[in-house]
Image (tube, rainbow, N blue to C red; front, top):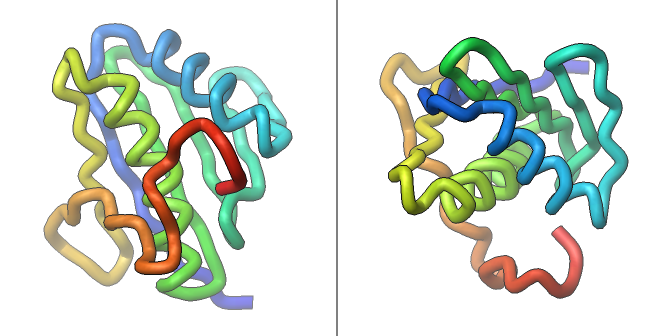
Length: 120
């Protein structure tokens, strides 16, 4: 099966803290598999991966098509940006088909902004 992949490298002095917050929040709805500094879960019709490194938090989104990829990117990116708003964290996504970074996609027209209630 062919899939599309996008990556966002987010520089931060506290990647472990933001990863823990993101996994904890999203963990209410999905189950994360963690091995070392890599956590993966099925999200919004695709796969989301969170990787912590030295001064870097990396988000990976993988999905069978562009629409599902945009949903995974939105879920991971929008939550991280909200948690990291004080430190101005921004998830800029780079895909195999795009040479330049793209901001976190907006929620699909049929989706509402996350409120802490309902599904992702």
